Amino acid sequence: MIEAVGLTKRYGAKTAVHNLSFQVRPGAVTGFLGPNGSGKSTTMRMILGLDTPTSGHVTIGGHPFRGLANAPRQVGALLDAKAVHGGRSARLHLLSLAQLGGIPARRVDEVLGVVGLQNVARKRSKGFSLGMGQRLGIAAALLGDPQVLLFDEPVNGLDPEGILWVRNLMKQLAAEGRTVFVSSHLMSEMAVTADHLIVIGRGQLMADMSVKDFISANSADFARVRTPDTEPEGREKLAAALAEAGAQVLSEPDGALRVTGVPLPRISDIAHDSDIRLWELSPHQASLEEAYMRMTQGAVDYRSTADQKAGLQQPAGPYGYAPGAPQQQGWGAPQGNPYPALPGEQPNPYAQQQPQQPAMAPAVTAAPAAPAAPPAPPAPEAPDAPVDAPVSAPADLTKRDSEDAR
Ligand SMILES: Nc1ncnc2c1ncn2[C@@H]1O[C@H](COP(=O)(O)OP(=O)(O)OP(=O)(O)O)[C@@H](O)[C@H]1O
Image (cartoon, helix red, strand yellow):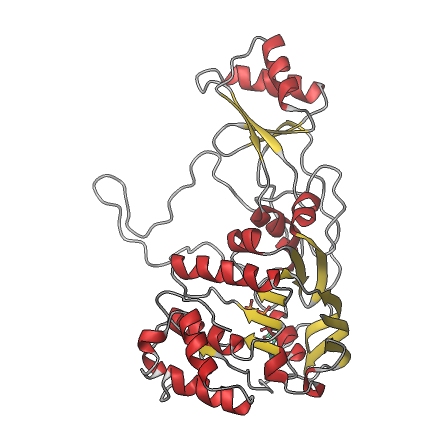
């Protein structure tokens, strides 16, 4: 088990991780989520003894990483797949790691097979693709057959087959009773890989719960209802009737109504009683992505803006189309925050650091709950201080995985 208690890391005036406490238990895949720059890699480096906490501590099986006897046999990690001596072959790289960790050399060929790199084992790793490098990193993590595994963005650069392979590998490792801690920005993957989630924003803990609980706590199922496009008055009438029945009704970009607070059969009955035809009445189940976006929207530090291409517009052509000119948004195009607060939702303490526009126009009633005033981030922002620690690095590569003959 990994246990962090009051973990804090400051780089000069920058607080990367603030008072973080959590446990990562064996027998499950624990996803580690958070926006860019939220402190995931810093936390992983502290777990692995590559960064020293400013305060607090983190242990693996009750000991700090540096206090573990024969750490490579107990803990495996993929932090930065590029941190490999490019002049060495994959095999040589793994052999040197095996030697350092007192691991038998024959294990190298086993893990090369597990990650599917056996055919390129003697090639220099500097010629490896991103995905091959990730595989080499995973092989290095598996080398000591450790009980605790940490993976920072393991599917980065992998092809679909590789992504599926990593998913199954994580699950298998957890099913064997190991502790598997994995960061990723791919919500669709996390949804099918992780059992438990630890979510951080601006270095602070935002959630520590099962995937299922996380989705239900941060999202609401709703019904999509569409009336015939040719009968806009029917849509307004239905929205009013639903509001009367206690529903919250919002407009979707395509003209459908997003209805919460009233079950599907009741919506159907209300439409029938109001003599309104329906073109669509469908349940919508929230995804992990939706729940995650809703929770972390206010903790995002790096947000894109529309590309105005100022000064780059060309004169309009004969049909009025100017290449490079911003296109006018169509009716109902999504704007601003697509994840409004849920009705009755507790304000997210991280939410709305920046002014947000309502995403969906209220159709008739019950606009999203007003956002709460945000708290300040843990520490004043400051230009990032110089990097003070090298990142470790396992490594590895492609094709098809074979059986691990441990
Ligand atoms: N060695 C360092 N020196 C100074 N600042 C650092 C250092 N390492 C990380 N930081 C800063 O700490 C914050 C957290 O960075 P970190 O890499 O841990 O985030 P992350 O959640 O892993 O981000 P991403 O999802 O983009 O990989 C960032 O603002 C980063 O610039």
